Image (cartoon, rainbow, N blue to C red; front, side, top):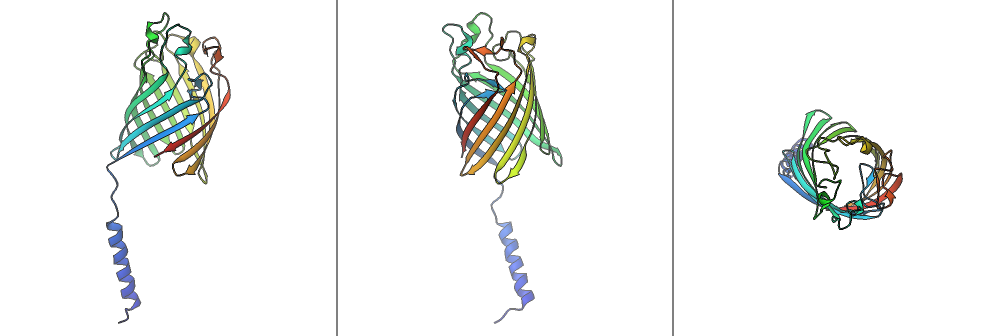
Amino acid sequence: MKLKPALLLSILGLSASAFAQTKAPEPDYTLSFNAGVVTDYRYRGISQSRLKPAVQGGMDFAHKSGFYLGAWGSSIKWIKDSGIAGTKGDVELDLYAGYKGALAKDLNYDLGVLRYEYVNNNLGRSPGYADANTTEVYGALTAGVLTAKYSHSLTNLFGNINSKGSQYLDLSATFDMGDGWTLTPHAGRQLVNNNAAYHYTDYSMTVAKDLGKGLTASLMAVDTNAKTGSYTWGGKYVGKSGVVAGVKYSF
């Protein structure tokens, strides 16, 4: 028996509708992992690894409601480079949680708390230093490709005495260049409460390429105007201009 064209199209339409209705629903949550290496670990423009390579990795949990939490770690050198004999701490572990949502079309927000834990560090026992462990709260707004983020420390900031309430303002943009390429310009301003010698501005430009199968390669040009007297650790000026290459695998 031959089917009339109209009847055949109707059946095909019903089949497509049934297929669409039976596709897998959005998962309640996702769990992802990442691992990578960089030629220099720069944070807010300042080298945390004495201008040397660092190994990094992390995990992230995200719920469809907008809630997320995660952990990320890296090798570091700056605590041992403080110049105090017996100072320990060569691993940074970041623990964070927050909530993301939308205020309007193309206007999103992100609120959270971040704890920088420097495993087994004893910097606070050294004269002139506070505990390296630091807690910050943050808030960010993203409008299209532009993101503005403000971070505020609830504790002393990265070993600086009497620096509770320090602030960092981060302005960045992410441009999709097509074929897996992205371009991210950034500028930031770090203010260390009660210690103007540690104020500085940092700038960077990052190009990244999605290589497929979870691999991403990146190249970043970075510079700061950090004072050499404040940011020379282990005999190295860690705020100098430089180029950082990295590879990350996400799974």
